Image (cartoon, rainbow, N blue to C red):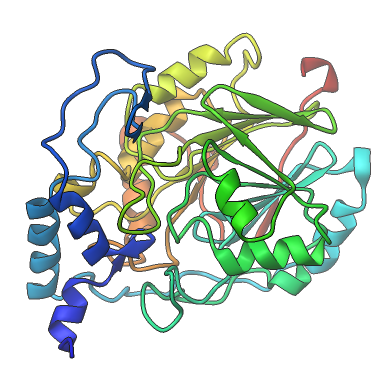
Amino acid sequence: MRTPKIAALFRMHTGWNALGLALSLAGCQAPTLPSSPMQHHTPTGFKNNYTDAIPGTLSDLLRWKSNAWRHNLPPPPQTPTPVVTPDLAAIHANARAGAAMQPAITWIGHASMLVQASGLNVLTDPVFSERASPVQFMGPQQAQPPGVAMVDLPPIDVVVVSHNHYDHLDTNAVLALNQRAQGATLFIVPLGLKAWFADQGITNVVELDWWQQHTVQGVEFHLTPVQHWSARGLGDRFQTLWGGWAVFGADFHWYFSGDTGYSQDFKDTRAHFKDRSPEGFDLALIAVGAYEPRWFMQNQHINPAEAVQIHRDLHAQRSVGVHWGTFNLTDEPLDQSPKDLAAARLDQGVAEDAFFLLKIGETRRLPARASSSK
């Protein structure tokens, strides 16, 4: 039987067992840089535009986990992640408003955000299970319940999924969402994930490659490149695509980073959509947590300073931090992200209301753009 110390060494990370990652890495060759950007299809799977050095080597993984075990990382937070009671009446009234819907966001937790805009109720990377894990008896555990319970959600028109790690794609959640909508909820996913959804009995699915788009009731959903990776088991690393989402409605343009390391991809995204949205995105949902130690996480997870740089790269009018305060995935405490984000804003000259954080369960209403600017 595995001892507690060994179990801690191989605890779940970023959605699947660290032992599985170690076994997968053991058979891979040393990373090589791509010959040129945008060549992300390969005979053996997908790759990033600007690096193949993800998720790292087996020795790097073992070094990180061993050091975390020796130093008892992450330390407990000094303050709990802030939580508020959701304003369900306002959320549901807005959901029924149709064309009169006020752009608004509600943080469910981690990377799960309810985005209400342009007549659609959209959910990003829904995770409602207690643990981000293939099993519910071990793995990263939510520090607090979701900010809005599954039964309290309004009818969800669209779910966007950034990639297949367990802290972003929760089997129980998508099954429940599909069942409560009797199949009416549309899941828009990166290339390769439609087959996984079909295996779950979910068929209302559209899968996209980078830069492809799908339109729902006049709202465009574009999958954009980010720097990350995919896997849900021992032998499927890089077999499905990952990405961010650029969403354009008549009255609101928004972006969701999913999981990512910092790369040229964000400047590419700005350039790609500059004519489509000259003013930049009205709102960007950008990951700000799960980033230490930098020597191991840098290629796959941004830190708050890089998140602020992405905010600037995208020319976002406002940004909100996600992917923090929910799961212990890396070496920093759950309450470190707000401190580092505040320092990064100050250092880069970004106002607090331009890159803000929400409490779990909190709703923030945002200004709509003129419909003529679609």
